[in-house]
Length: 130
Figure 1 (tube, rainbow, N blue to C red):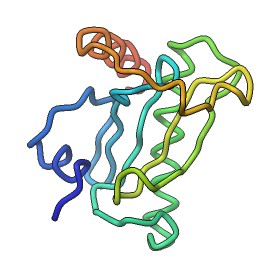
Figure 2: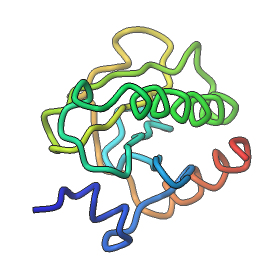
Figure 3: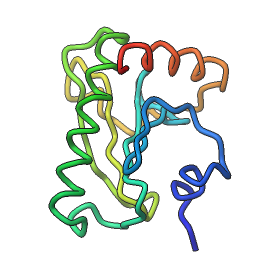
Figure 4: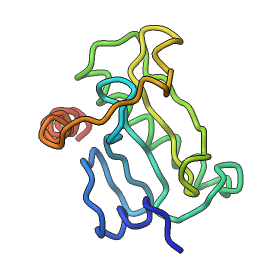
């Protein structure tokens, strides 16, 4: 059964897209822990990040760097935190979160954000990625 992320890749479920190429996709998290919290995924469904082949894993990280640079131009922060939890969706994904300290990576702070707010933020970030 395809994961929710595979359905997003297929266009069956909408997302607030930040960047896409033939192998990877990034979009804003619907339940961000901080404004600008984004997900980066490979389009190929692989459950566990360390099961990815070397080239795909390296490509995912290079792609994530492009997204992170766009986020930090829009959201004031010290750095973009990166984490891989990998339990909530059986499809490899990286969380990119604007942070000023380690406590900003607290997933218990996640809350739903309205679609219009996410759409406006996605537009601003996309402008800096391209």
